[in-house]
Length: 116
Length: 112
Image 1 (cartoon, rainbow over the protein chains, first blue to last red):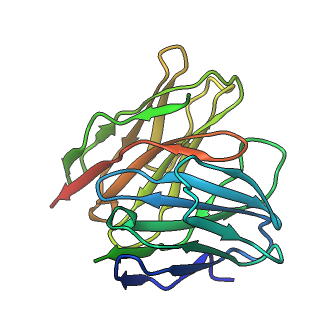
Image 2 (cartoon, each protein chain N blue to C red):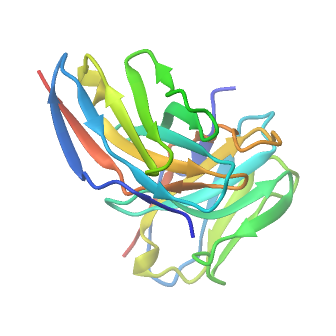
């Protein structure tokens, strides 16, 4: 296992189009997170899954955003009717489900979205 | 609300010298971790060092160490014997059970 992988690495889309990103976590990790990072800022939490259950969503995740993790393995993040403000790096991370706060998150390289 | 503040957008250091990156945070939780992550250009974020809030002893990982001042809610990162490969964005993060809260980051330049 080579770590968290994300596809595609780069996506350019026209405003109003729908886009979907995929994240494959480290195989034994049952927690999966999505973050958004805009230029010059730190990552902002969007949502996380424990296995296939989506347990928390940020207020940043508008109704145009939807995330799934149907079999508790890979996850997809879809953005409908993209807007220029959606341009950002979308980061996926995974971790083991320890019952402590010390769950090291391993990050993928991200998908850079540009909406034109 | 939980917040993390990094007040130094950019820092620079000469190779082999020491540099300290600052971070302050706010949380009402009693159980939490603090992290420093490194994000090299066009590469994924990797964990540099972590600190358990209930431990008073400062964490150390090789050339990286932290100064954790719980009462002041301060968590600085010291890099000793800086190397060219240390050049990156460094993010301070506050960890709870469900997510990480990141600061805006500090861009570190290392000059030969």
